[in-house]
Image (cartoon, rainbow over all chains, first blue to last red; front, side, top):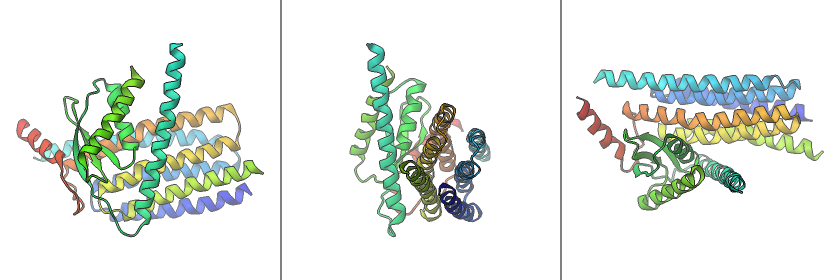
Amino acid sequence: MIESAAYIVMILLMVSFFISFIRLLIGPSLPDRVISLDLISSISMGIIITYAFISKKIVYLDTVFIIALIIFLGTVTIAKYLKETKTKDD
Amino acid sequence: MKILIKIWHITEFIFFYLGRLISSNIEVAIEILTPRFRMHPAIVEVPIVVKSDHEVLALVNLITMTPGTLSLDISDDKKRLYVHAMYAEDTDEFIKDIQKLERKIQKLLN
Amino acid sequence: MIKEWTIIILLGLGALFILLASVGLLRLPDIYMRMHATTKVPTLGIMLMLASLCIYFTSALTILKSILIITFIFLTIPVATHMIGRSAHLMNTKKWKNTGRDDLEKAQEKEKQKTS
């Protein structure tokens, strides 16, 4: 019962992954792409949580923690970089 | 006794925070799912009174999670906050709302 | 029985919220509005999914780890959005046509004049 529900949830998450990937491709400016990457990280956290339901193993929760850590560092670094290049230009 | 009051304040704050988060989610969901946009966005300058770094962090978190507002920038002397609001027809009302949040944070962290 | 349905409903609601966030990312008109959609909505979605995981594997370690993850997400996502929003405004990203007043623009102009 729960497993089949988890498969349906997985399909929903895949659809949302695809939609935010479209925004990553067409995004008019660089910050648009960065926030869409941020959302993709949230979606992959959701996918891993759902996979923990399917495989009945709790170890995958640690992976979610690592993703939450790393994506924050990535976003902050990109924001800092954008600011530096902008102030250097003018 | 003091500790008990502190714990009560913290639990009250957590439930307040969760309630704000859920209502903001419902608001964004309605905005996304209805075909016509009925928002009037603006970037508003809000004067703040909280001083320490912890309080500013809590205020920024709370503003970002409350319905319709998103903090964008803070001035160098930590006295003015720039907030992007989705429904900003009435600016004074909106600033009063944020000052209410500020008082709540001061009560919690002092 | 009730436990099973609670797990399924919480998991499905979380996934629906994340789907809603991605639809909002595609549909809303400018970057600030999109940031409204990508901060608030997935946070609640991940929270609901972790809650259903806590009900499924009922152990103290799971609950502790989930609370850690949720606290971390709550602390970091607003900060990341704050920084991205500031750099987007510095880059003069295009705003939606109905946007009203913009106080930040004047402040950043003043700062630029001071440094130059």
